[in-house]
Image 1 (cartoon, rainbow, N blue to C red):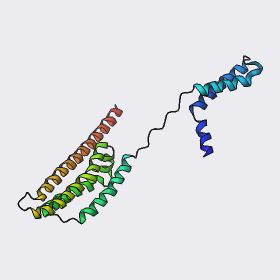
Image 2: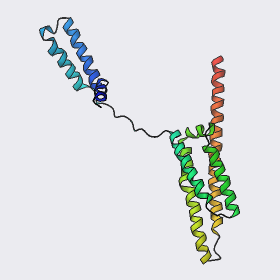
Image 3: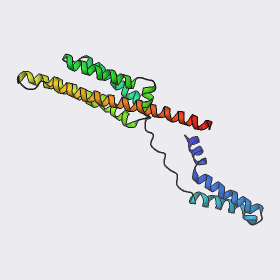
Image 4: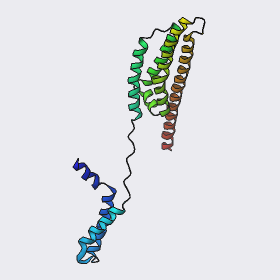
Amino acid sequence: MATSRVLGYLESRKNLTGAGCGLAGLVLTFTGVAGPYWPVVVAGLYGAGALLAPPERPAPPDFPSPSAQLEEIRADFEKLKAYLADIDLPSAAASALTGLTELLDALLAPGWVAEALARDPEGVHAVSRTVRRDVPEAVDAFVRTRWWTRLAPGAEPPERHLERQLGLLTEEAEQLASALRDAETRRQESHTRYLEDRRQ
């Protein structure tokens, strides 16, 4: 701990500025300007440089990288799939949910798609929101509402709302996948142009 503090000070702006001023004091000594008081001149210039040095910049916050965020979303997606496996859904809603989970699986699977997703913070946020909030809330609302419709028959079946919600989430995920594909196509075209320009 003490060693890291010493090393930290040696690399600090105060020490570097003070050392620069101290070197100027040594130059004054060798040119004969400082005279017999050269140790005081060198130490004084070092101290003045250390006092006048600009303050240290605080280190920027260390946020998790998009790849680390995707790992967390994958872990949460596995929890979500385990939760969904225990839910009994009507066939149409189950089919819509299967399509959505397969699409999310494809987006989160390690490989070039996940790498493209990691370069798109908005896309990472959209997938995170779908996995952590939208799908669980939609399914949970269906489960709770289905129980109440048994007491009040004749109301609109809750599975219709669930199907519409899952359809909207699927459209959103498909748009994200399409945007990622387009971005990769543009990157490839840009690299082709770069290689062509390099030959000219």
